[in-house]
Amino acid sequence: MNDKYHGFIRTLHWIMFVLFVIMFVFGFVMVEFEDSQPWAMFDFHKSTGVLLFGLVIIRLLARWITDVPPPAAEISATNHRISKSVIHFMYLLMVILPISGYAVSNIAGYQVSFYGLELPQIFPKNEDWESITHIIHEYGAYIFLGFIGLHLLGVITHHIKKIEILRRIT
Ligand code: HEM
Ligand code: HEM
Image (cartoon, rainbow, N blue to C red; front, top):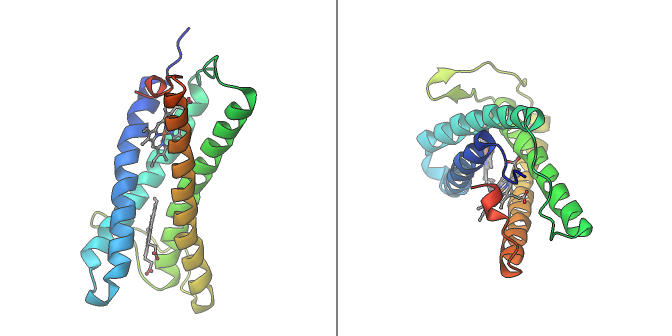
């Protein structure tokens, strides 16, 4: 039986992994050095975040129309349930983060561009909403990191128990 995710999902998993690493590095660095106005970093972070939003929609559609492989036989029902929940939360955050990032920019009065192409102002400028959208984006990023940590912990513990799950996604 085929125990691998569809090749398209496998490719997207690793492309998006690299892009998310870049997003976190740029996100934290640009905020740390905000005083020296690293606008090029902001633009790159926002453009790549919009790109990731497009990719996550495509990935969700691809997941919906392709067969998700059944869990490895050696995995207990509880572990399977946990890993499924972690994956669902990761998808939720992959959608929330780009939307909240877009909102952070628009609500503070900044436009978003996609590698130079100006995108529409979707959220109106509103000072009252600035801090809440900022909190959602910042803490959403921390929570996402936490789930990525749990995901990796799952991969490592299965590897230690000699249950090979990495081949499902490579
Ligand atoms: C796709 C997933 C995304 C991830 C993982 C991500 C991650 C991050 C992180 C880690 C920070 C630093 C948080 C802090 O310490 O304050 C940040 C800040 C920021 N992000 Fe994102 N981001 C994403 C998408 C976006 C998008 C699509 C936009 C805009 C279109 C955006 C706009 C911003 C802005 C404007 C800030 C700076 C907020 C400030 O001024 O403090 N992000 N992001
Ligand atoms: C940004 C970081 C990551 C995110 C957001 C992420 C997300 C996901 C998601 C959503 C799935 C379910 C399949 C799908 O729909 O694509 C998955 C599967 C998987 N990922 Fe990741 N992943 C990340 C990093 C990694 C890394 C670094 C590894 C390995 C060291 C890894 C190993 C796996 C494995 C083994 C599976 C298959 C799990 C199974 O169904 O048995 N992931 N990942």
